[in-house]
Length: 508
Ligand code: 4AD
Ligand code: MG
Image 1: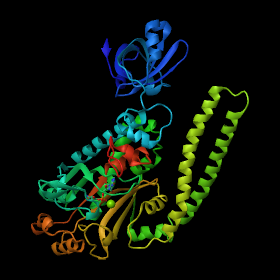
Image 2: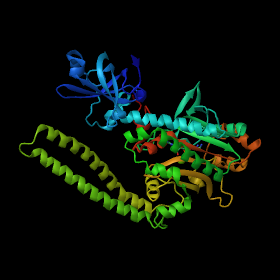
Image 3: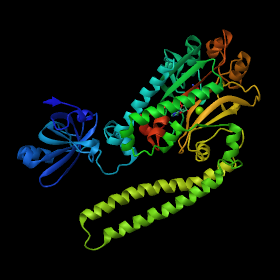
Image 4: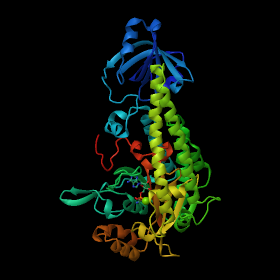
C-alpha cells in the first residue's frame, strides 16, 4: 500500500493509501468516530465506522486522545464539503505514540497561555496556515529579486556600529570588544551595491525597544535591497512593483491558507491592481489633522463615524450576550444547548473586549490627530488615522530630516526634508517598509554623524563609500513579520514568526 501525504490526496481518489500523522480532533457517535488528522502537509477527516473496521480498531479510535501519533490506512474519497476537499474511509489504524493531556484543547485559551505553549501551538491549523504563508512569501521575495537582476548577499549580525540610532541597540561582547546585534544590514548593503549594482540582504535584525505593541518584535527578519544609481523616485517604483508582485504571488499560491485564516483579501487585491497612493510628509500631516480631504473624506469625521458605528456594534453584541445568557437559564433547556450558548457567549465576550478597546482609543486618536505637530514622526495611531482613508498602501516621502536616520539624503530643493519613504499598509497595519535615497555628500554625512553623536571612527569604512566613486543610490527595508501580518490579516506580529522574541518574552 502506498504511503502518501494528505496534500497529495487528489492523485489517489478512490484508492487505498496509508498516512502517518497526529490526531487533532475527535468526535463520535455510537458507531462512527470522526478524526481530524494532520500530517504536516494538511488536515483531513478520517471516518472510522465500526462495521467497516471491526470492534478492536473501533475501540482504539474511540480512545484516541489529542496529538496521539497514528498510522492510518483507508480509501481516499473526494468530498468538497470536508476539510481539504477529501476524507479518508478508514480500514486500519494503529497508534505510533501516545499523547496524554495535551495542553491545548479546542476551547478558547488566552494568548499568553498559547504563547507559553508556542512549541505546541505551532501545530494548530491557523498557526500552520500562517507559517505556510510566511514560507511562500519568502519564496516570492527571492523569486522577484532573482528574476530582476539582484544578487543576494548577507550582512553580518555582529556589528561595530549603529545603523538606526543608538537607543535600540542590543549590546554584546565580541572577544572583549563591545559589539551590537545588527539593527539593519543597510550600511553593508550600500557597500555591496557599489560592488554588484543591485543587491538584497535577507536576515535577522534586532531592536531593543522596550515597548509592547502589536507591531514590535525584538528580533525580526528584514529584506533590504540596495541599488546603485537609483533615486528616491526609482526606489518608490521598485517598492511598488515588488510589493504588487509578491502579494499577487502569495494570493494565488496561498488561497487555501488565506481561507483558513478567513482573510478578506479585498485590500490585498487592491494593492495588486490599483496604484499605490504617494504623498509628501507635509501633505500627510494636513490629511491627519483634518485640514485636507481625501475623496471627500475628512480624517476626523471618519473617525467620529467609526466611533458611532463601533458603539452601535457594541450595543448589539451586549444584547446578544444578554439574550443567550437568558436562554441558558430557561427551564427545561438541554445541556447541549447550554454549552452551545456558552461557547457563543465566550466568543462574543472576546469580541466585545476588542471593540471596547478600540472605542476607548478612538477619542485619543482624534485628539492626537487634531494636534499633530508638523515636524514630528508618526505614531501608530497617526498611521492608522491616515491609512483609514485609503484602500491601497500609502507611500509617504520627504520626511523632516530630524526624525530620520543620519544616512538619508537631504532634499536639494528644501533642506528641511530628507529623501526617505515609508510605506503604510491599509487596514491599520501601519509602516511595513522604510527606505529612501542615501546621502552621497561626504561632508553632509560627516555633519550628520556628529549631530547624532555617533562615533566617527566606527563609520570610517562607511565614509569610504563616499570617497571612492560615490554615486546616487537608494534602498529600502521590508519587515517580513509586518508584511505577513498584513497579508494574513493578523492583529499582532507575534503570530507571524515561529518563536517570537519581544519585550517580556524569551521562552519557549
Ligand atoms: O524603518 P526601519 O527602521 O528602516 C531601516 O532599518 C532601514 N535601514 C531599511 C533600509 O532602508 N534598508 O525598518 C524597516 C522595516 C520597517 O518598516 C518595519 O517593517 C520593520 O523593518 N521593523 C520592524 N518589524 C518588527 N519589529 C520591529 N521592532 C521593527 N522595526 C522595524
Ligand atoms: Mg521606519
